[in-house]
Length: 92
Image (cartoon, rainbow, N blue to C red; front, side, top):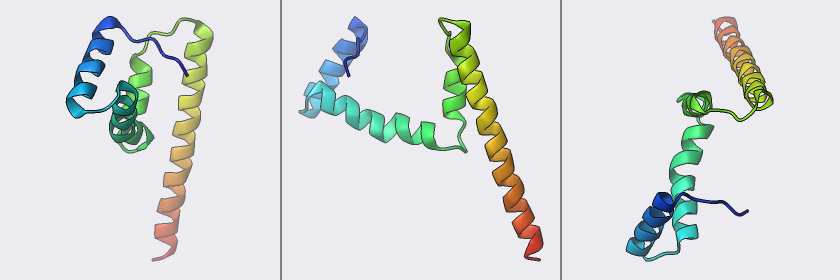
């Protein structure tokens, strides 16, 4: 994968990777693994949904795809929550 960084982000990445004694790629991968990935994969935080909701999409199709995915996610979480609540009430 090849990504294009803004000059400001490239300079910051180079600076902090050098400070840590690593390559920019290694530094960025570690940062993403430690910060973005856990936040985005944690359904309790809502960070992924918040981030996606604040983006400006290039096309209506892009926005509709994200909206449909969010609706699906909310339905799945609602079903999971309902099943957990039913299970708790059945065990009483």
